[in-house]
Amino acid sequence: MPTLKRWLGSLAISAVFVLAGCSEGTESETQAQNVTSSHSQTNTSSEPASRDEPVTWRFGLEEITGSVQDAYAEEFKKRIEKSSDGTIRVEIYPYGTLGTSSKLTEIVREANVELAFASPGHLAKVIPEVGIFTLHFVLSDDNSINKQVLASDELHDLLSEPYGEKGLKLLGIIPEGEMVWTANKPLETLEDFRDFKMRTMTSPIVAQAYEAYGAHPAQMPYSEVYSGLQLKQIDGQVNPVFAIEEMSFHEVQDVMTMARHAQFISTVISNKTWYDSLPDQQKQWLNDVRERMVDFIYEKQAEYNDQRLEQIKNETDTEIVHLSDAQREPFREASMGVREIYIENTGERGRQLLDFITRRIDELGSGEQNTSEE
Ligand code: 6CS
Image 1 (cartoon, rainbow, N blue to C red):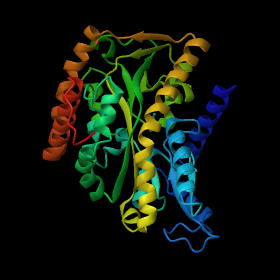
Image 2: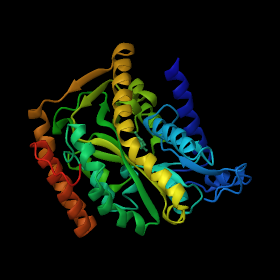
Image 3: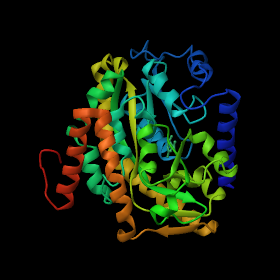
């Protein structure tokens, strides 16, 4: 019973977090310290001590084993270990072993872990510009268009300064699937959101998106969502299908509403000083691998989301509601004010990011090509 197994996994996450008395951003240092102490025998500097002692890159995930982030990290590990002929080893730390998303970012900034996922829904607390990826109705419904924009050098260049100022290097912008609302009723109109307690990730800009719909957003870490739904502390949550299935959220919710309002986007980060001081050869392996993994992860996330949707349809009586373009329109209109809040928070850099993404999505959507980026 894979669902039960995964649920036990997520129960273990909650237990670890509750025992550690942590919440997103206020968690004790203990779990992060464990990673350094339990690997005190491992060479984590960038220079291999000898052929017999490879360097180790630790990779922290915000998701459990079997997730999209896990698929990325496993493939990254395979490719880096192969390119480096075993002189680099990658150790993967799934969600629950190091801490919440905010904690992961913190330990990468402190250089206690070399690589991690950092999703904008949490990371925008630290880097407000990255909140661009949490805005609704910005990206295209067509992921081949999103890929051309999100993997472009121009977008990475616009984000590298905000990441760099926080001691981080942006290594990849990763799609994880369309965001889907879950609740015990269909969410088809703004009226359905009135006074609705919607769990969101922990950055204020994500919560503002749901305030604009009339909801009461409740920001909480991923590990607390299942129990929050079960105990009716929250009425609903939003995540891609693969995550809804593997975290068993559909087991405590009756309806999934697909409004195609946003993609779940995550980013891969490293400590900037660590990255800058990598030997040229290692940096090249890293950059070659991450560039070549773009197609892999677009395909993999689609496969995971499609498979898990089929599983939910076949194995549960979850109701699945698709909003029509006409039904989406009031949400699109209500979301526009949040773009102004984003620009107020981020100034000129945010405006440039928003202009760049919306312009490129429009151009590509209307068939225009900018050959300098493709
Ligand atoms: O909802 C969240 O908090 C999380 N959702 C996913 C799909 N990945 C990581 C993130 O922390």
